[in-house]
Image 1 (cartoon, rainbow, N blue to C red):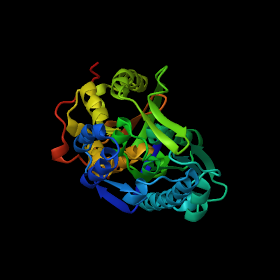
Image 2: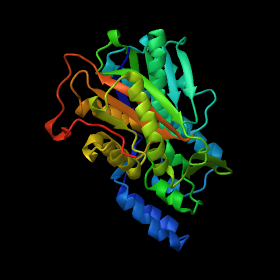
Image 3: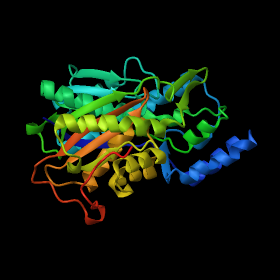
Image 4: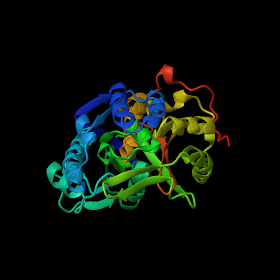
Length: 373
């Protein structure tokens, strides 16, 4: 069985409050199209307090050539990936040369060679380390990366480093005067996360990876992703996403638990990518659980917004620090992304001396998990 040894994260330097970003967006959008004023309320209801960007606010409102934007992506993605990796390896007590394979996830910029090459030499990984760059999974990339890393670890007994870096601020299109661009500007942020996975017997981590599932919904490729226009990345996000999750999630969840022979009531931890407030509310209602069950997802959304693929790893970091469960209980890590897909991984809290009961204020009522259609 593969085990999560540690998670490390990194953030860019420009921190903005949601109030400041709302004022900036209001000035920008409403001055160009008055009818967009009513959409600014999304800033008040997004449950986001602050976000971090790799560029200052004045940069966002100007037009930029694709070459300039992508160079900023390359510079910052390299730096944040290295910081997150160093933090992760330090927490795990693992030397860089002990890593056997790198999975590198990113969908907000273009790099050839892939950015794991720069990471390998700057951090001091072995030059013969395995490399698997992953592009195009969007918000689901972090969860899909956990699934792939876990499977590779079980098959090869390798120590695998998963790194996810997203700079969504660079995809903002100042000339896109559509409601979906206003909504995106109320939600997205930048960040990087690294996760180290190794055979369970080789480390002292708290969570084991049991199994994973991935489920695509047919005829849904237009719901989420990027459109590559003359100005670069243009966000594609549909109002149908919550209803799609409501339809897709129960099939993925039931399949995952049934294949593992796990009873729903044994699941105690919920490590879900906070794509937005509506996404988490759909999960709450569908699973019949209170919002407290998704405490770390809501906190990550509040403090960082939606950082695409990296976000679920920020949630995982918070769960490991603040919501540890009794040994033998289970958790589910999940995200949804372009395709449209559901990516779920079943985790099990390891039977280690470090395991402690969770804080009383996070105790959940009842012990029944079910999906309510």
